Amino acid sequence: MPREVDVARLTVAAIIPTKNRPALLAGIVERLLAQTATIDELVIVDQSDTDDGRVAVRRVLAAAPASRRPALDHVWDRAINGAAAARNFAFDRARSDVLLCVDDDMEPAPDAIERLLEHLAAEPQLAAVTPVITNYEAPALAHRLVSRTFFRGPFHDDRQPVYWRGAGQRLVDVGMLGAGMIAIRRSALADIRFDPRYRGASLGEDLDLSWALRARGGKLAIATDAHVIHRKAPRPASRHEEAMLTSWGFVYAKHQPKTLANRLAFAWFVAGVASTATVAALRARSLTPLRSVRAGLFNIHHDYSRCSFLTPPTATTGDAESLSGSGRGVPA
Image 1: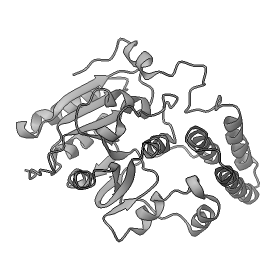
Image 2: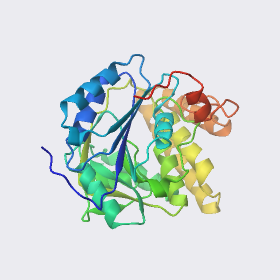
Image 3: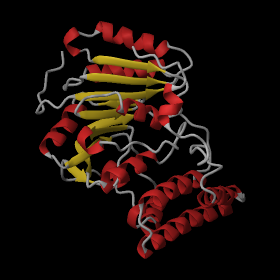
Image 4: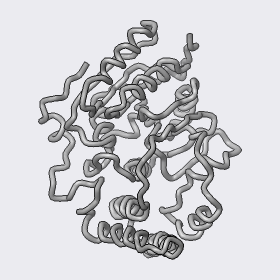
């Protein structure tokens, strides 16, 4: 039996977006129930084609001791499009002090939530905190050199060194957090939500949320004493330049002041992506990497109208309309 931990008794709502992965969903629910800190609410937003996930979750909860079972709110709605929309929907339903977003392919250590709550309890100004992804592989030296040279200012991803090099302190301040497993203080979140234009398997919504929290004065950090494994599902091979330019370009246009320094940093960022694509094109003797850059630049200059993970600006993007109007949302 996991030991009970009183972390200033912050209540916790675990929020899980899921789609067509009942085995993974059951697995993450089992790990959450086995945590050393108790979960008060379990809000599952299920976009699956069948209700197999609901059956699997109820089986896991039935096998758990009554004292460890959280209040369950399992919504099955195929009209919800993507993890960002699912998390937004859950934000409006959960009532706990801390909103813990966790994807179904994450494997947190048994004390991961306890560690995150300890930091939130000790640091009132801390808006959100994530664990360290322990199976993150250090990028190649060439990639690190490109990042250090070209990705400056708001485009510097300070999460990466913490993942693959570690840190001397238990809590490391950073400028952005990943959304795969993130504990957010409800009072810091307030009315902040993921941008409703994100859909499907979107990219960049973690940057969008991070920069929105920081604009409100929130502190973001990685807890190096909290650990999680990310079991990423295999994805089809594809060029990354379009997605990289599109995702960063969208949040830059939305959040960053267009000072001379930021404009130069963005231009230098684009130059870095284009430079690495040129090298890749020469090595492969193919124009595909450069076409990927061109597609990303097209998205930036045409309001992302051809982007696969952002709805066109003329389309209806309100989560409330797409979710409540479907008629298929069924809370457990």
